[in-house]
Image (cartoon, rainbow, N blue to C red; front, side, top):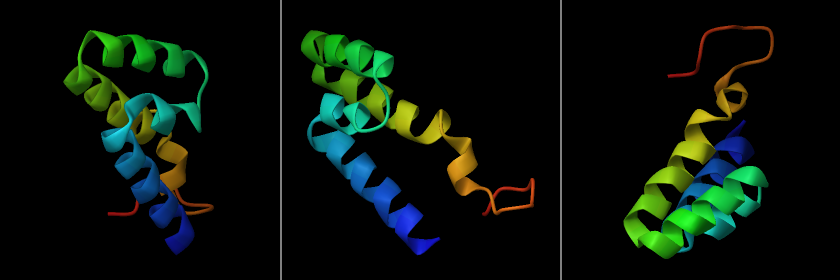
Length: 71
């Protein structure tokens, strides 16, 4: 459980420093979109990278056997 949170923290930190690399570790099509957004502007790349890492992987924040998120 703690290693998942640590991994997510490191992915988000990496997404802030270099957005396409943070997304590359988990997705492929999103990597291309993030790369394009980063080329067009650094801030849109960061926003999209954090969105991809947090919003598209909700199963990371659920306990096994439960349907409620950990808050």
